[in-house]
Length: 112
Length: 112
Image (cartoon, rainbow over all chains, first blue to last red; front, side, top):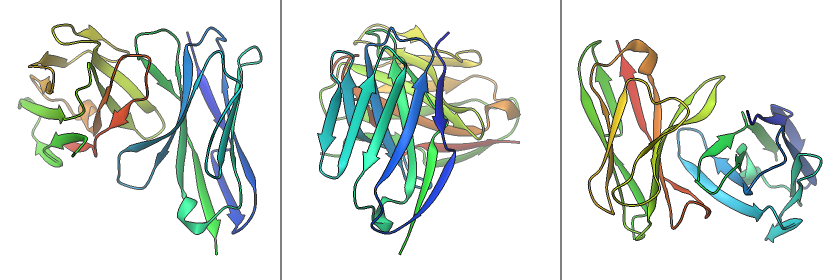
């Protein structure tokens, strides 16, 4: 059974710092991996999707990498801003059915 | 273009009552999903519909039924609500199962 873990559960950094969020999964036979952002009391916003054949994806200040063989993905946020404060979730699609398995999330606070 | 919409935003039920959560998307997506989000458990898939006319169970389907009314709409029904169904419910959609999922704002359900 696929399990997804995100460490740390919470992170607090000063504004301007570069940071890395970690996601690990137990079964390397994945179809793709997605990173989402969730603001308090809101729905999820898709940030990046990495196909199993890809090593990384970039969108603005965000860069997500995928090492399928080791069961790991990282989300790199450059030059963090207070507006980046949110919970970041990774989710694995183990088949081509769209059934996502989510990690518990990392709650990020960026202090001005 | 509203994306994914959900109604109601908030609902209080008594144990044993029934209700239907509504979800609609205007992105011409084929696939739709229902998740629940609970503290400490993360997001878990309840049911999904890979395409119009099909529905399948997810990780936690007990106590729920779904209807894919047409390509746009996917409803979730609680026939006899239980306190364990107190949760935040999210609907999502994607073009095809392998693509990025787009989430609605959620329905907060409290069962007393």
